[in-house]
Length: 198
Image: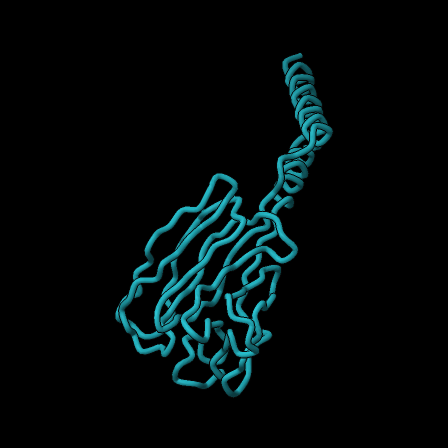
């Protein structure tokens, strides 16, 4: 029983190295349209466009027919600029998914140009919006990103960005401690088997 508890503790320790988060732009919830300066940070991510005007980004009011997340908030590049997302303070992150919709929430089909940058370079793909009003979930599942960017004319709105702070490679001391723990667990199992066999 002690061995099982020890192994469970090791699994929790390994799993806790990543911290999952969802950025839902709750800080932008407002009854009316809100102008948002670039860059804007929330939930460990920073959102920016090339423009520096105080209304370079925006968010529809929570009851606006244009809001793809009624009662909540979304973020939009106000002039159709390329929106770039990075980890606040720098570093890498794992991107699981996000939700996108056309800027006026009218179900306008379109193609969003997406770029994903990691240590090996930048990879582009096209994300297709469907004809339905509201936000559509896009599953991305890219790891160790330095940034990602999206662009669509006239614009788009984004919400519910699910990501993890990417774990760095463990240091040698961490590996040694983990391997030592597995060795102790294996020895305890062997000892237990020999006791039961007697």
